[in-house]
Image (tube, rainbow, N blue to C red; front, top):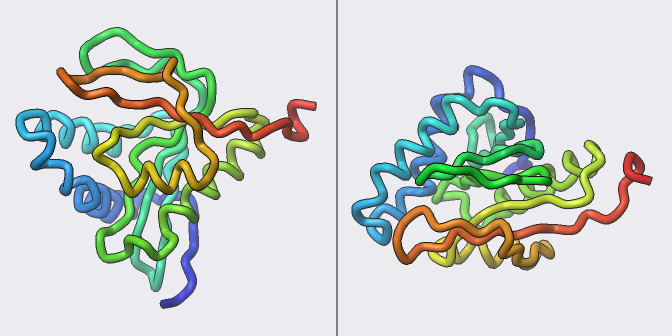
Length: 175
């Protein structure tokens, strides 16, 4: 395997980003049953309009093999209406091409998000995930993310989207 490079996404990357993200999240279609199509539409819409987020890609041999969005602190609109204040930068839609799983792509993207959050002066980095995203959950916990129940929300009956946070400590900008 050749070296992995994490960089800012470019406009010409959009098709590959959508393809990798949908391929990565496809495994959740069956467990989500009736809710999958709405979730899929939300993914596509989020990727089409990233707004204030930084969109990053992991590239190997010229191919995009992973992607993630890093949002600044903001108010997040919830699927059933209302909103949730996100006081810290937030990682969203981390995706690794299925053939690349276990090769450090997700970790490299997350490490870059941590680096950028620290550079921006953030003291905390947050994210959301569910129990069905077990591999991602294990990686986040290995990186030091801890539960932040105050960030939880419930997009559908019986489903808790769990908030997590990583304390970044003091940065040069916050001292």
